[in-house]
Structure formats: C-alpha cells, structure tokens
Image (cartoon, rainbow, N blue to C red; front, side, top):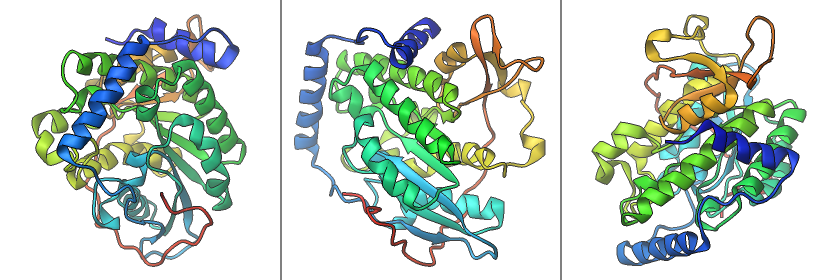
Length: 339
C-alpha cells in the first residue's frame, strides 16, 4: 500500500528542495536491471521503432485539435505492428469522435526515455501548438535508479512549461513494474512498491502544476492480471494491441475532459463508483493502488486548499468503446518520429 505521507514527502522534496529520497538500495536497482536484461535475452526483443502514427484523424469539419504525446516507449506504442494499434492513434480517433472535429496527432515520445529526456521532447511538441498533451513516463526512471525526487521535479517543470504554453496536460503515471512476469519474486514486489510510490508522487506534483493524472498502474488492472499473455506483447514487457486498447480506453475520458469535451452528465462525481474529494496526497496514494483512476484539482467551499493541502477529486471514470482509427495524412512536425 502506498502511503500519502510518502507521496507527499517525495513531491515536497522535489518541488521545494531536499535530500534525495531513494525508494530502495542500489542493489535492488542493479538486480532489477539485470533481471530485465536477462528476461529480454531469454524471450527476445522488439524492434525499437514503434509504428509512425502521426497524422490527422477523424472525417469531421472544423479546425483540427492539436494533440501531442510525450514520454517513453509505452507512449510511442512499442509492441504493436501497425499505426492504428498505437495508443496515440486510438486516443486521437476517440477524441475526434467525441469532439466531432479532426485531431492532429504529433508523437514525440521515444523508446527508452526517462523523465530527464522530456525536456528534449517539449520543443518538438510545442512546435505543433498543442491544445492537449499526454505524458507517459516513469518506468525507465525506476529501472535506471533515478532519484524519485529528481524524476518528480523534472516532470513538474515539463508540466508547467506545457501549461504556460496554454496546453491542457494529462499524465499517465508510472506503470506498475510488478506486473512484468519475467521479473521474479521477490524482486517483482520491490519493483511494484517503487513504481507505485513514484506514481503517487508524480500525481501530487502534476496536480500542483495544473495538470491531471490517470493511474496506469498495471496498465491495466484486472485485464492484464487475468490474461497477461494476451495483454502483453511478445517481449512480455510492453502492452500488446489489446493492452494498448485497454489503456487508451482508460485514458480517453480524462483527455476528453481536459479539453472540456466529456459529456456534462458524466462530469459529475459518482459516489457509487467511489469518486471522492480528498487532500491531493491521499488521492494520489489511492490512485496508485487502482488503475484507471483520475486525479485532478478541485475546490471545497470555494477554496483550493484545506488543512492537509490542495483539494483533489479522485474519479473512477466510465469507459466507452473506442472507434477504429482513420488516419488521413502524415504529420511533418520536425522531430516527431520515435527512435
């Protein structure tokens, strides 16, 4: 169980200064990287160039909505063979269907990227003048022994830069590395603890910076646990086409809401689904334990903050079926091709 205190400590140290708060010893990270390498050698690896999904989606009139995706291989769609199977294409098609406007998708995410690499991706993303940015990052930070305070500070800077440019921001938080089958126990448990604590701290920082988060957790929750062979790609590290579809379905309501496109009747908190208004660190800890949950800033009696910090709305949004992506053209934004 992730504690709100731990999430708050990491985020506070990142945003206001403080010592490096490690989540585990150097031996843990070294062993984690070794096991990941051994698993990849035993199973085989994927081509490190995801399909190019940049382009215009949706046969609708009107000015296109610009949508940029930053982050790592999961953001880029590594693990599938066609552009239509990538999370970017699925989300762009879903947004176009909801908005009834075309969506221009620009993907600047890179395989292997850590949070420290986001600063290099931001200029290419901003060149597309995005109305919305989705960031998915964190897993490589855990396996590369990046200090969580450093990761969170760098993510905070990126979110604020995107927000200052007038862009709505949604962050898919660090996925749960404890779901990766080739990582043996008890290392898998330690990986789960480290990734979930980073995810919770990311949420605190992102909400403070003006964005919102979606917990990718096991990307994925019960679907991945029940059918890992179906939901993971052949390398058993990255999602398969079915896995990315499940993740995109979980993220779509949040990206649509960030643009003000989600139906008004579905924007009201639903108590029966477990929606609640909580201090942001408490909401972040809860979201890290349950995939697909959204955390965004809110107010209580007209106030942004209470005795325990900023108020946040923890939401369990209802998913909807994703339409088939229909791409009309290829984007030409410099630097938009994954490597």
